[in-house]
Length: 326
Ligand SMILES: Cc1cc2nc3c(=O)[nH]c(=O)nc-3n(C[C@H](O)[C@H](O)[C@H](O)COP(=O)(O)OP(=O)(O)OC[C@H]3O[C@@H](n4cnc5c(N)ncnc54)[C@H](O)[C@@H]3O)c2cc1C
Image (cartoon, rainbow, N blue to C red; front, side):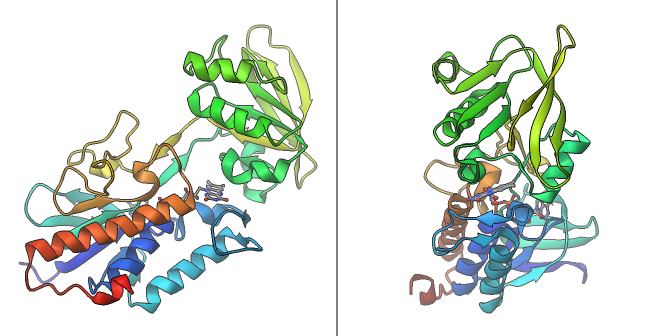
């Protein structure tokens, strides 16, 4: 073995709520986890201001602060948190091989994948501007809908998730305008019917976003155009929700792990196990349904416990720390 190859018991890829929670459990179980943060240390929550639905923060907390706390907690138990992007893996043999930044090679007994997913956006400059300002653009109705109570919002999307999110918003907001690019929904009939039958949801078919409007700080409306007539008009709104899908960050695993048609890693139901022994998944990388910090953290815990039990069964010399359960 070359000197440059490092051997680790438990490698965690990703530093969102799933990765750090896996690290806390793995570290307390004596697995000496090494965690690579990737290009977004702290994960998706670092792009949001207020998190009000993570248990334990009665007054809410900002996303970046919450993730700093999770990192601190993981490091308290001596998780080795590192900068670095995993560029390649080879899960074909008994030893799981992982490359960081294309150069560093690591051989791992267990790997916990917590690489998350990225929300898709339209890509308009005005959308990105208010997204970065935290001024009214969101890709998560469950996370941010509450901030728009009794207000008017616009949502873009035509699939099942978009319908679900529009319906969720309709219970909080005065009015929801839904922009659908084609002349029909992509969603299932039942989901489309639910939206159509909700009185405070207005659906505009053949309609696309021309510009997100604002006062320089917050969103004040959306200019839309009909893609059949090219006619434009403005809709007053304080929130602009984008529900056009997510892309799981799983491309590097596709040659080894079973993925669904969108790219989410398929886990053995009720566990964090993948189709490869010793490789586990947690968080949004495998979750196209809930996509919340608390569910990501929960599955991070599952992945560490599954990894620890797998290691203990394989290697009788590995001593599980009793502190896992304390
Ligand atoms: C704007 C916004 C607001 C939100 N608000 C809330 C909220 O209020 N409440 C809530 O519960 N949820 C909220 N969510 C959803 C929540 O952020 C996610 O469900 C959660 O972060 C998923 O956690 P995760 O650990 O699976 O992945 P992520 O948080 O997506 O983290 C993925 C991590 O993997 C790393 N990574 C990816 N690929 C690689 C690689 N190849 N090598 C190394 N590292 C890699 C990234 O750098 C990142 O650190 C929000 C999401 C967004 C976008």
